[in-house]
Length: 410
Image (cartoon, rainbow, N blue to C red; front, side, top):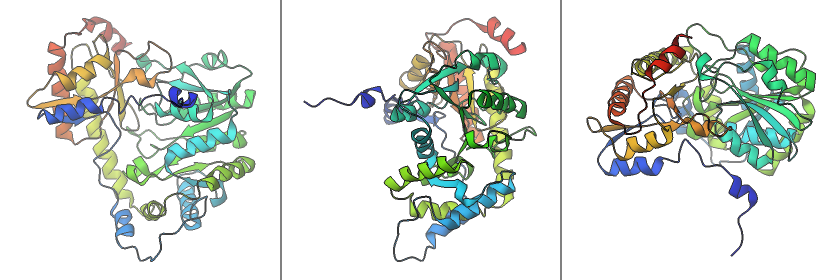
């Protein structure tokens, strides 16, 4: 029998999706599963995007340019300029989701065996993209006690070796919802400049910042223009996850010309989805105002509700639509599975993503879970109630309430 490739064997399982069979089993048993494990918002996609596809008047669904339709890239560049990021269409490469943008970027910038430093916990699929490119992820650990702020410069410096070629961040963050400040990004700029590294920034949640917080893009860091790669996507901004349209942006001309060769090898990004994404750029600001107000209310219901449960600690995020909570349990891997297999409250149960899968350091995050507050407010209230009731009877519950309370006030 032929053997499976080393990359195939090393490809990590998704911590976001691996409990799906248990959720399906729970549904077959008649339970209503409240899905908080994955960033699939129930927010309606913009009408202008839906109408652009619905009213399409074309006889052929043709290939686009490998970099994406020029009309879309021009319009997207206008959008970036409107939010203070000065780029032109030649500095934008349209990709099949932000995932392909990261893969193209990694393949363009790194050689097999190179190392990239990523603050953990991080979006678990970064591991998969690194595996495809043959590079090694080196984690630098952020702490739940301070809301997952950027680790100290010294922590980064201690990890840099001759193999280190880049740093990857997500801002606002998935899974934590943490929003890096301009000061924190300036610290990263100094490290990048000192060691001549690439800086990848996944900014797909840029629109979703709360409590008056404003995002600061790495594209506006001066002096490292050729080192910066911006990753973007329509998935979250317009609640169009299934469109699978992303973008890779850089002012480094050689980098972009090289990435285009990878794009040519896959011919073009999806035509219909590009049409919808280009139309989505005409979405009125009122759409985002309503969505942000909705996410703030959802965040408050979820995070405040969690922190009111004895023994649970959850920092309040300033962006995205995720939070990471620490639970008084032996293992959130076991707890999340138990919720689906053994528990229900008023006919409902909750599906979360165990946070250990978002850490690269073994043993970290075993008592944490990522929660996506992407459901309606009533569903989130039900989820909090389910979790509170579940913790009263979970066999692996730990008595750590005092410890958590001290951390919460630290």
